[in-house]
Length: 343
Image (cartoon, rainbow, N blue to C red; front, side):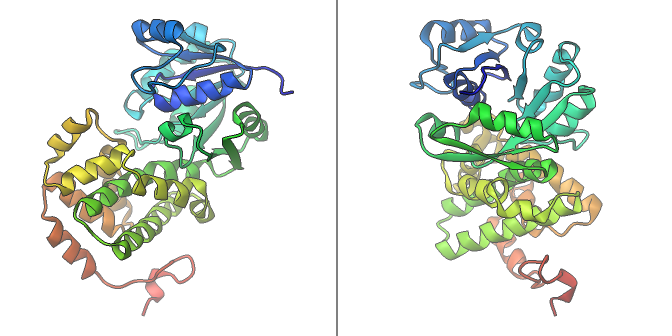
């Protein structure tokens, strides 16, 4: 029997609710912080997050709260499931109540606009002395809610944090693997959003299975090339947080980024695609930031370049595809054969 812990989840969205409910169902006392008192009251009364996960029953051990100090001050483990655009602001509000040594894990996949900071870097900058980790993998919240088998990765250089997260979240349907490459795991979860847009675009255009296979494997090559240039371990990208997350996001119509790409492939503008979705998919902003960083660092990312032209400059897809196919033919896996040895 695992000792019951005090768990806090910051964020009232779908994945935050899933994490909160798994921990609560495992017998832990869970507080889920959200801004909206009306929604918190609805969850208390109905035991259901009707906005994000209708029909998914919530444990009696899950308590919605709207006060940050109440949520975090005595927590043994804090999960942060806040959109990247609001991540730093919420952490700054919570920081006075988080003590050195507390375990804090980001589940957010994104990059901060002005600083190119990943969420774990924001946690390190804002929470002095906290023990930081990252949770990422092929984790569609609606499938987890239906009890479908799912696995994820907890990444940290802190072995206590890794083992604590594994014990708190492990269930018959949810398995947690460990890694010490936080940067690679987090970049994998962030970068794949870009290529999910490309996958949705190609699906709408009726491209074949050969094309899909080429697109996903070249996407993986670009992701790992970029991440390694930023200090990640290339081996991370053959695991759940790399190729696993890429596959599920590029193949599932449940993915917001895929749906944006599909709308673009149907001829909609970016504004129309975002309006139909009801929110900006993380991949749209990530594409802009990664393209700028790759240009600055001179990292070869032809798919990012081409997709940027389609998404932001309304370039004709056929012309972009033609340009990509006429690019210099390089190596398949450059960690086996470097690009400058292709000839």
